[in-house]
Image 1 (cartoon, rainbow, N blue to C red):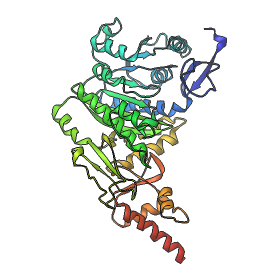
Image 2: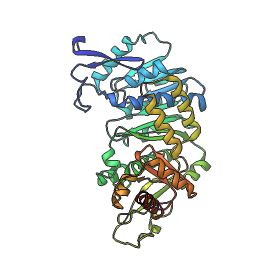
Image 3: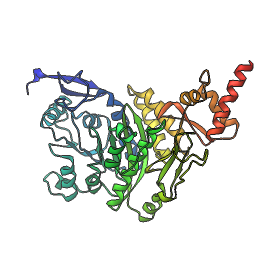
Image 4: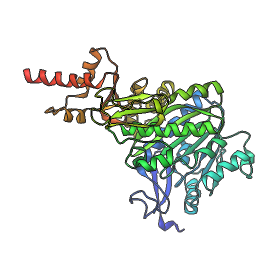
Length: 414
């Protein structure tokens, strides 16, 4: 590979080489080495998560595995922006990627870093197995299992979770998982979702949250298979991907208690009633509890029906983001504050544009106006990061529709 075929690009503090023909191309597997500028938000929040994890859960020097590094931008940014790293594995199965990573490491003057940088060209599952069994020369330097593992594939992460749980620190390890197969998780390809995640999706107005909860459920089940459990710290959707950060746990009582987080969502396609259940699927209602319809009742699951975010962790991310001044800082601030509002709110959300369309209202009221009315009536309500045009509330759908009709009447009278 000649340098004339490469171009040096900058992202925040890091500079990396990419193939000149890849620079402005649509991200795809056909690229020489995968790089997606739109995933910068993912990398920003991942770095914040590493810093927050180091402060809140593991003050020791960190051992990190970037199992699908591609261009290496995530790892290089971590090396330059995150303190307290002892060892980092930068791995990709693509030989062209590994070659670029070596060049980019040199371009960022990290060759003589005191941090141990181990660059490898292996299948991610093979790398995880080596680390778990300490069968490679590199893994023998580890005094303990990795604290942090990042899985960021092009598509589904399902193939890599079992071996990742075998490799990661069993108590308070940080697992970072991305899924970009949103058409599968969001119910556009339901059979593929059942095949890949062993869960039935639903393509509804709140399908992004359903998809995130299906992925979280699958991660938790893979942990259970390996005698572990998970504690979700942050689950978010952006730019056609879902990213989850969770802690590992080994306490049997906590794992057993977490079984209450497995459940289903029942949805009526006629009246749009929805509710989460953590019961045996055979006990799910067979007709809509709201309109008594039998033919239009449907469900999604199994999926995670518990909390998806941890307030202390999110607040730490917000503080770190305010101090670091990332290019995406404002966007991150908005996203994380909406995530904070979602904590302890019911599953699902209502898209106000679609709701007003169904009610045949001539216009859509301002979200803040709706929120204030719902609060005055004594209900909980928040916006959601999954959809900026939607709200979460424990108000039932009929009462919510009546609120919108009340606003219409006031406007008509005025």
